[in-house]
Image (cartoon, rainbow, N blue to C red; front, side, top):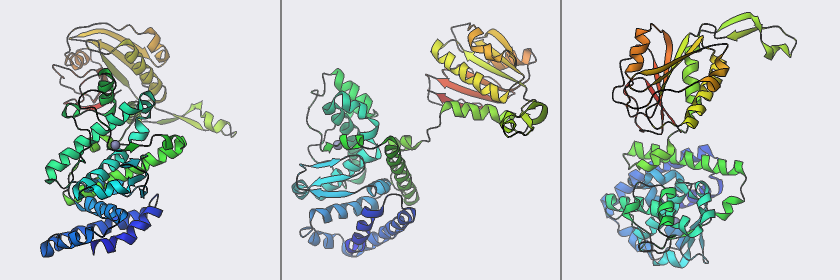
Length: 438
Ligand SMILES: [Zn+2]
């Protein structure tokens, strides 16, 4: 009953899945009902009815059934959305399985040799390649060494399958060909790749072959926009799966959470932060003509943030922030200040105390990067900055601190503070706001 209800749906999904929002919602609704249905079936009959059917199923039916089971099981439901992206087909010419990052092909003979849990493991393997966008993100590794790139990607996802196997009591198992090595735990494909290359190009340990084929080539035929579209779709599918797992109390893999963190450029965060102090203080002035309107022969006042006061930039000179990074950061600050136009910038260099204090007015702000002379080194006590500000009676709108984040005393702050952490700890500061600069 489970299958007959879902099969026609599965066919629709194959054809129209891409970009069809209402269909996606419908599928999610079906999934929710299925979860209930499956529990009821289990209560009444155990698994008997599935077992009798299994012998008569075609390879495609087995795959479809495994899809439903994966989408309904609490340890794998977070992949429900990803499973439904792209097409899946059975192919006589594929030895095991193959994915290009969107579609999956399964070898007919191979499918028929697998146990139910191994088949679920194989399907999950292909869908993890899709979820992690391996064929798009790591193409440069493939170009460097296809064999090692294939192995590296497999090592990463097979550890996740192994974890699910353990958590679910064998609901999903990795077919015996799968490459597993505990020493790669916590690494991404690039890190595994580097290690394997250091060891002489993938011969190390048990050696072995990836479980499946990874079709890196067909991605190359897509335009940049098409790739972006696919990645967006996968991203959305992952979010839907996470939502489902969240609602149903399903497993949520940490690595996936990281993948889904919104990727906002630090430059934009810094711009937003500083602009927020200028907002609401804009004044219109007829002294400066708005050039945007001038081209339409209209004289309109300019809006400038005349009343944005001082800002303090505090640069930690003790740690691992190199000259190049400092330059990049200060250039960004300078370009933002051209818009938010603070009255003064106080640029402080500090280690255990403030070692240098430079002041730039609106007029000489553009010389900041060229003129500045960093000073200090050794020790990191951020508390010296708010203390210095207080002693000198400086009244900034906000303070931006550039540091590696390995700080003994973060200090007591009377003004808003933004920590820009470079090359350092991934954690957040205990006071104020934090952005990670990379
Ligand atoms: Zn693989």
